[in-house]
Length: 77
Image (tube, rainbow, N blue to C red; front, side, top):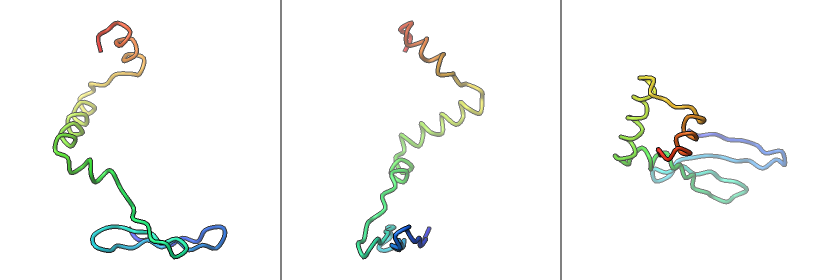
């Protein structure tokens, strides 16, 4: 996603791609945009955990925060 913004002080912020990475330029300085979601999505173990969680939610296997706190207090978790 490429964009260009102008800050309140008139500073222009541009985004662009270089070497298959995304960067922004602020006041002439270049900064790489780091997106940890890409790292998570590429990890097969984490990807499987996400898919399992999505299935649990779809199947109604969910717990409220209060349920979890009570289970912890009872030593179940």
